[in-house]
Length: 249
Ligand SMILES: Nc1ncnc2c1ncn2[C@@H]1O[C@H](COP(=O)(O)OP(=O)(O)O)[C@@H](O)[C@H]1O
Ligand SMILES: [Mg+2]
Image (cartoon, rainbow, N blue to C red; front, side, top):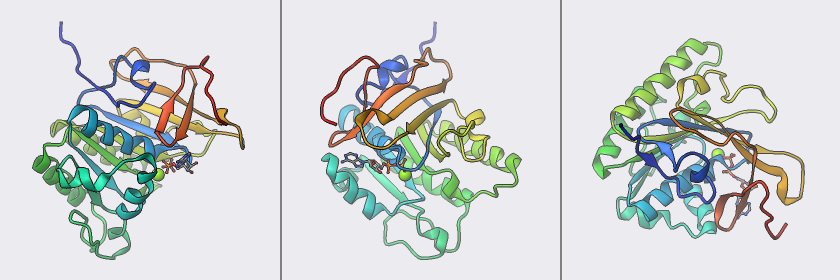
């Protein structure tokens, strides 16, 4: 019998909902409305990978500038610069290439406009250089696909996840959706192409219990089908058990 290796996220409460982690080599979509914690969760996947499992990671940021991400996550006690110096993490900056401004980052996209193939080459190059096992692409909508042509988008995402599998990494892609929408990616095709879908929800105002998550799909995995309370705190993202009481509002 062949056992599928699991890639643990190290995120408290998450791995136990899916047989110990993501199936190795696969691509997982993390979707949710803005502010639901997609960026924090996916960076935490890489941070934990480096710190807990000695697995280097590559973070491709297309929405937010790397310097702001580094700054924001110091709140969680994560020193990304240190990991970058140790070659346990590399950030590829695709955030300002899209608007034609050259990046000051070591790894970035040329300012000559955005190009998926160039991005894939850069991901392959950086992944090989540090021996990365984990990749995050944040976010798919920021790749700037033509919204009208869902077939093209499907092909592009398929190509992306195929390539990520070929280079042997286990990846997270993020996608923006409206709360309550009955699709899991902005284009309504992402969820079919990927191997797993984790949905983050943020409803209501105030109180601690308004953040939840569920695993919509995880191929080759027996996973929880429940809605779980999640918390974003000074420790980053934590998934709570449904019946669990947790302090401080
Ligand atoms: N230190 C913190 N404590 C509690 N909540 C936080 C903290 N830092 C960020 N957040 C919450 O996380 C949100 C940002 O999460 P982020 O991962 O950037 O969302 P997304 O990428 O889904 O838009 C903020 O809007 C805020 O609600
Ligand atoms: Mg984000």
